[in-house]
Image (cartoon, rainbow, N blue to C red):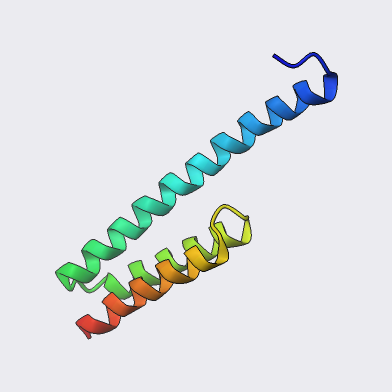
Length: 86
């Protein structure tokens, strides 16, 4: 355990940030999975699910949770799947 006050604060901040990032990543995976299933089924809500997934990926990117290239790759793959169905 840290003895210095600023380091104790950093440990607490790190835990909070870790929980927040974990929640965002978990939600991101859920949204992506729903979009993939909707596209695979060819359901009417597929386009809406893809738009929501892309939006969620962009939000995670803007918060610094995902690297910009990772976000771009995920969006690209999702759009490729969605366009292949059309």
